[in-house]
Length: 85
Image (cartoon, rainbow, N blue to C red):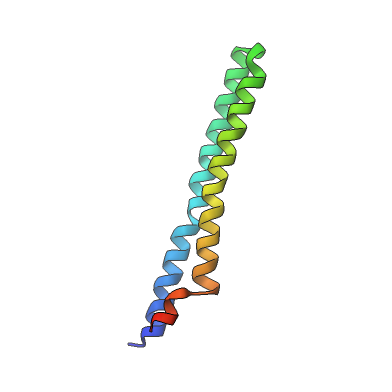
């Protein structure tokens, strides 16, 4: 078996798994937005506090998916493991 082909195949699988981090992030942001809308509906006077907390949480969740995308691109485009062969 060609070691270069093996490393490239494993890197493609790892990149696919890293790209799945966007799925969890999207689900979490959707749930958070829905709960924030419910909270604003119950307490309209606390709208500013609820929305600012939700936006900070969404920004933190979005960084997780961005990191997953960066890892996937590094594994596919500039594979650092090929230099070890």
